[in-house]
Length: 393
Image (cartoon, rainbow, N blue to C red; front, side, top):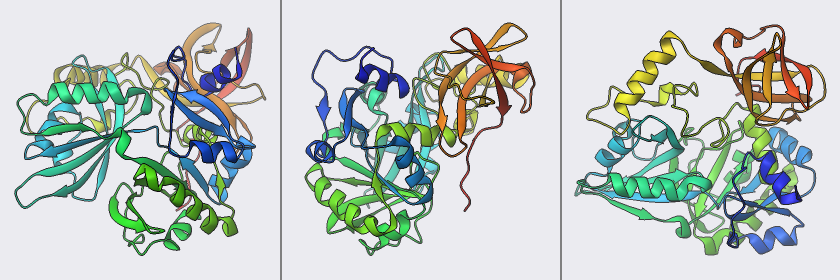
């Protein structure tokens, strides 16, 4: 297994590497000038790390980190029936999202299997009643989500547009991120709630400023034109240098989200699981008006999960130093009781951690006798509630 294969395995991306050349973000040359280790991820050449991934991780937890997330997939949905389309296509109640707010949701198949988890922003509404939404999909599923939305738009007065080439996406995350951004914009950041966004100018660059992230810390995601990405990166770097901001790659983003108990598509989420199987049934809104794709199957999944859940997603903390990886068996009493979905050393806890689906009988925090089969050795692990880490507000 080569270096890029190992990197992709660590990030939970075990699909065959693309036979076509990977795409490059607008910041590709800058990443290389900073000495980044690059990797092929979801068809994109992305920075894995710039130096020590542990140092990058801890910088986000204690100071701030700057990420290039331009591989994410932006899809615009507009029109008089844009909200109706999204309510039908997705499991959440998108019609109830206020202008300037965002919602975490999912798009499922008719059988309830998860196609992707998404963030949907409601950006504007015209006097004529036409709504404007932006759907942000995972890079690996962007085309799947686009195709599904286009197919499901039949019969709705709404347009679905692929805007992946229209945006670069930068994220500044960590406790120092509000101060860094305030030095570069006059936008009302103090009034910007979590899972909300507003248009503004950052360092002279027009941007959609969103208070969202995938690290467990306070932070912002900045959607800008690709041609403005390098100017904004440099401005954020200069403004953040006095408080310890560092460039960060996908490797530490993965350990940050793991500590925060956030699912990764392809690991904790897949078409073989429903939101209820993944412990995320709260995102499914049966009370919304009208039908939606997967409603009947998801109602059955909700009933099964409440009566007799087959497996439950839990946290595992190692008693020793050996690191579990996705696919490793979770064992108890000599029997396989589950499977690791994500695992890594935790820089914050100082011990290896993992998320795993385990039989419900072994899912309670503190359950004794649980281990992970690591190359034939059953290493002891403590079952804990997720998340492993929660920031102090």
